[in-house]
Image (cartoon, one colour):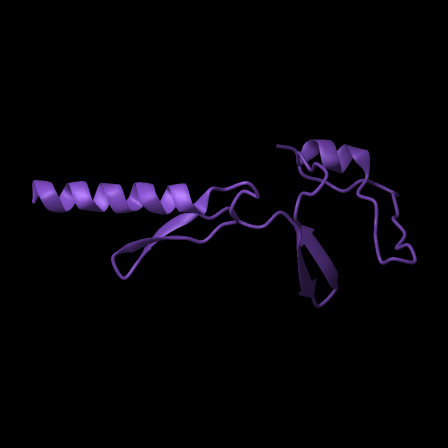
Length: 94
């Protein structure tokens, strides 16, 4: 990947506090609508970056815990039923 500045290009903050990321940068970093960016304060300004991707499931005290975002149409009743069935089958098999 090529790193560099978009030479001579300035952006302006609008009345709502928004900025437009130049098309060249959106394409280079695959930024799409609704992409979340992290803002980091630095001594010489601010840095916008794509947050570090972390696994959505991690072990906490022996349990798998979802630490990402759930899909809007997630069926939690079905998910819970599936987990309970898996645990029941593990218990039966011993």
